[in-house]
Image: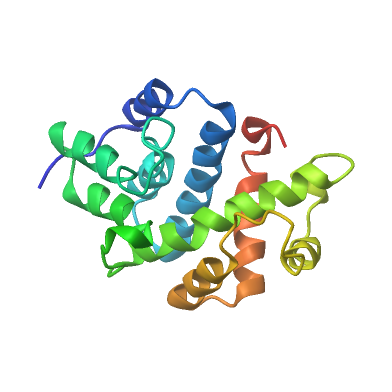
Length: 187
């Protein structure tokens, strides 16, 4: 069993590997959602938050399917970090073939794409604020296939189902988690 990085160590790793501010904000959004779900499920909020923070830390340097998230996993292993952290990050990407056989892995998958969709909805609001985003506004944009076309809606649906959380409840929960860090997200 390896060690877990502290939040500060994880953040330093994220900022070292990820210069793009939008990618950093995505990491903060997923971290907030993961922490909120960890609290809901009675799990370790720090560990779950770190998984959310680091899940895409290698993406800017290694965006191809052949490299992401494999290069990041390799780096985390080289630092002696816990295999639970490494496999959770691997499991968030379908192409790795890593099974989502834990609540942690399922939650990361369920929150990752959804935070992107919620962010996109906020950015088209006149205020550009999460405070003006509702489940209804997310669901309305959900139906527009050209809107945030890169967001895998099927993955969000599957993730919510794997968690046993109705989709609208899942959207509301992640939206509230993101609102708690809206300043950090610039939303």
